[in-house]
Amino acid sequence: MAKPSFSTPLGMVDILPEETPSWRALEQIIHEEAAKFNFQEIRTPILEPTELIRRGVGQLTDIVTKEIFAFKKGDTHYVLRPELTAPVVRSFVQHHLDQRGGVQKLYYIGPMFRAERPQKGRQRQFHQFGLEVIGSADPIADIETIAFMMRIYERIGIKNFTLKLNSVGDPESRERYKNVLKEYLEPHRAQLSELSQQRLDKNPMRILDSKEPEDQEFITKAPIIQDFLNEESSLHFEQVKNGLNTLGISYILDPYLVRGMDYYTRTAFELSSPDLGSQDALAGGGRYDLLVEEIGGKPTPAVGFAAGMERLLIACEELNISLTDPTKLDVYVVSLGNAARQWALGCLPTLRAHGLSASMDYSGRSMKAQMKEANRELARFTLIAGEQELQDEQFVLRDMEQSTETKGSLDELVSLLTKPLS
Ligand code: AMP
Image (tube, rainbow, N blue to C red):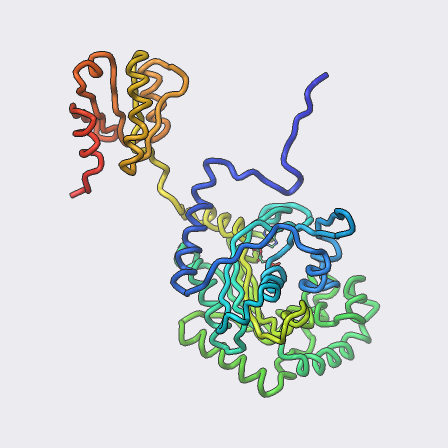
C-alpha cells in the first residue's frame, strides 16, 4: 500500500529557507523601531480561553461566530488566538501591570489563527505585529501608535497606501448615533442583506462594515457619526488629527470606518495598499477604553493596532523591495583526502569563533563538486586544503568574486578574513 503523503493544513504554509531571511529582517526592523519608541515586547500563549476571545473580540464578530479554531480539553474550552489585543489585555490584568506605574507600551509579533476561506493575502495561520498602549487616554498615545505603525512601512519603503481615520466617539455619543442609524435603516430593513438585518437589532453600527453589495446604497447615504460626537470626543479627535498633521502623516477621513464593539471608543484607523489586490488591508487599530474593564480589570483607557506580516511581505514583493542582502557564507572549506577533511572539520570552530560563518562538504564529494557547492552557497571565500597544503601548513584562500588566491597559515588567513575593510 502506498504511504500516505502529508501537507500543511488548509490555509497554512511553511515558511521555507529562502523566505526566512525576509521574515527575520522584518522582525528585526520591528524590534529596532519599537526600541526607538520605548515599547516593550510581550509574548503570550498560542491558546487562550474561549470566553476571553468572545468577550475581547465580540460575540457578533465574524471572527467569533465563524472563524475560530476551538477545542475542549477536560472541561476547559480553548481557542487558537485569532488576534492579540484581548490576550495582551488579559496579561495586563492578570499580572497587575497597572501597578508598575505609568503607561504600558507593549508590542508583539506572532502567529494568529482564523478559519477563513484562504486566498492570496488571507491565510488560516498568519502573522501579525502590533502594539497596545494601555493606561493613557491622551491623544498623544493615539498619535504615537499610528506613528509607529507608519514608521515600519516608511522604513521598509512602502509608500503607496491610504490611512483612513475616524472617531467612533464614546458610549454616550455612540448611543445617540446608533438610535439615529437604526431609525434611518429600519424602513429599508427588507432590502438589507441577511446579516445586516440581524445586525440592525443587535449592533447597527456594524452594518457600516458590510461588504454586501445590497447594503452599499444605504451605507453611503447613512448619517455620519461626527454629527453626534459630544464635545469631549470631538476635541479628542481634533487633537489626534492635529498631532498627525504635526508629524506630516497624511490621512483621509472615513466616517463609515467603524469598530462595532461597544468597548471601542474614539479613534479608529485602517491602513490599506493598492498593491495588494482584494485583500488590501495592511493594518488596523483604534482606541478601546472599555475593554480592560470588560476583561475584568479596572477601567483603563488603551489604544493599539495590528498589522499583517504576510501582506506587508506581499507588498514588498509587488514593489520589488528586498529586505535582505542575498545570504552570503563567509567561508566554505574545501578539502581533498581524509586527513584534510579532518583538518577542515577542526577549522570550522576556529573560523566561527572569529565571527565568520563557515561550512564544508558533508558528502565526501570531489574538489570540483565542493567548489560548485561553494558557488551555490554564495560563499565569499573558499579555504582550500589538500595533502600538500596540510604538510606545509600553508593553505589557499580564494576570493570567489575576484578569483584571486592567497597562501598562508591558518592564523594568517583568518586575520586577513577578519581584518576590517579599509
Ligand atoms: P484585524 O485584526 O482583523 O484588524 O487584522 C489586522 C491585519 O491583520 C489586517 O489588516 C491584515 O493585514 C492582517 N490579517 C487579518 N486577517 C488575516 C488573514 N486571514 N490572513 C492574512 N492576514 C490577515
